Length: 396
Image (cartoon, rainbow, N blue to C red; front, side, top):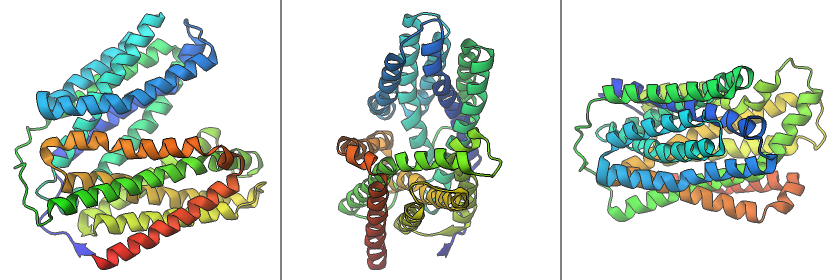
């Protein structure tokens, strides 16, 4: 571990964090009420149809982010793309107030297109803040992910509750106002004057290998998470019924997100003053992931109250694993990618994860029925990748 000297975060880091918090609060708050609005609002959709529309809404972001990144990197510029995306997203939230299917589909389309412009371009501009202080990249993106999770938590709790209790339109209006507010910190950020051609001793072939390896590892991590999620969800429901701890339903359902926030804050502070390579952090992440799944594997299919503590420990370790994996892939893309096309690279980073998740979902029916086997596969996969990363870090 190396002590970091003569490098510090700028005020722009925190302006971007505030903007991301507001944007994610708007987006996740809107997501929290949109299905209920389609079913219980004026439109009165069938539940299956509403879930299908919601599915298309979330999947469409993969394509819209690629288009938004291309526009940001090659035509508009990243900052203009962020501002335009925020305005379009807010118009989409306001359009949902129109009590008709036209208002619904127009609103969702605008949110998707605006989000496609906003997300990859803000990640790109944020990463460029650190081109001349790459040892702080991991800490910077950890702060960025911390802001995203805080925003998601605030949005779900506030807009979700307000929308259900005081009317869907009030929820959509608040989401639109939050989205517009997220543009203000971006406008306060000075235009990026960092030299885009950064000095590096890493060859282009090595950079491609590093980026590909990191994307593969993150894709595998989330694919494993997907096949194990049904067991974790069922375990949560079972423990909620038998646990003597006074924990509300809302806290049970958002336990992992609540734990991610303090662990991210601790990692941000530690990585601001001390540096280790990205692949060392990925190794630590997979080790904690293996321990987490190992603990879950030891919990019997019909748990008792005494297994609640084991469950909390396992979810804590899984949150630590996520802190060491999710932000690090973005710092890897920023450090080894071409800054001129960074938004495009970030938008394409979703594809390996989606592809591996699709493969898992195509062959996972048996795993969903045999949840113990799914967790065992997760333990073995995490252990194997931990060993691979140990050998890789030793050689480096």
